[in-house]
Length: 137
Image (cartoon, rainbow, N blue to C red; front, side, top):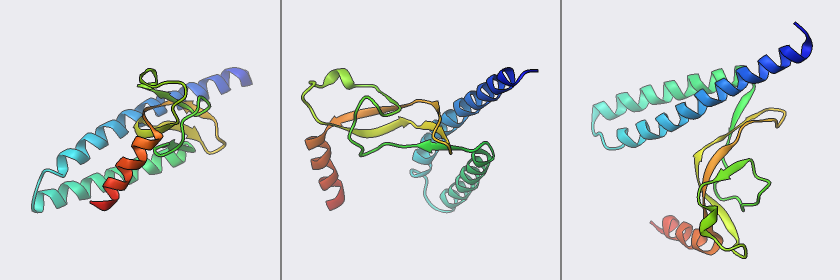
């Protein structure tokens, strides 16, 4: 097998792992949200299992030299490695902020983008007002 085929297979493997990691992230967000609705000892057990699972996924990602990129609170520009779901809702003159990461970007430690993330955007002034309200709660 020549080097180019080997690199191509390695990149394809990383893309498959990145897809898995993003699906895992989405599931973990849903699981975490559900556990917050449980009270008592059951809640503690599920939170413990969640933490263990999260640590194992993080260890496996490190073995493949991958990390997740979150851009919440960043000023949006077209150079960010994300796909905005709602960019068409805004005027070109609006200053936009990444309001929420829907799916994280998967990046190697060298900065190579393996999988582009998905985000929702907000106008900067609305985002800042909402953040102040959250901080005061």
